[in-house]
Length: 101
Image 1 (cartoon, one colour):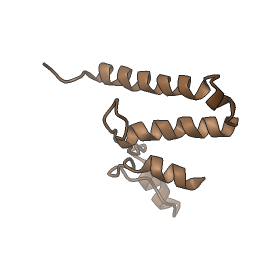
Image 2 (cartoon, one colour):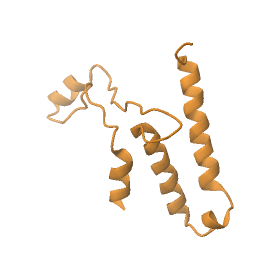
Image 3 (cartoon, one colour):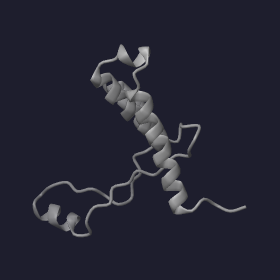
């Protein structure tokens, strides 16, 4: 066999995201009892679960900042913080989101 192509991974990712959109926007009795904010928050949580690698359908994904190459110098000159290139914030996003409520 072979590894998934970039296009296949992207398609699978979007298919799972679309399934969550359908789930959280459904007119089921369980969803009708939720507020719009609860539905949106649930959909965001589901997306973060994917990124963190807790979905049964997909592996985890890296979530890394990709600032413009000149950002660090620009922000240094202004005495401001800048985004680094070498961090991955995924892994516990869904847990942190749930705790924000």
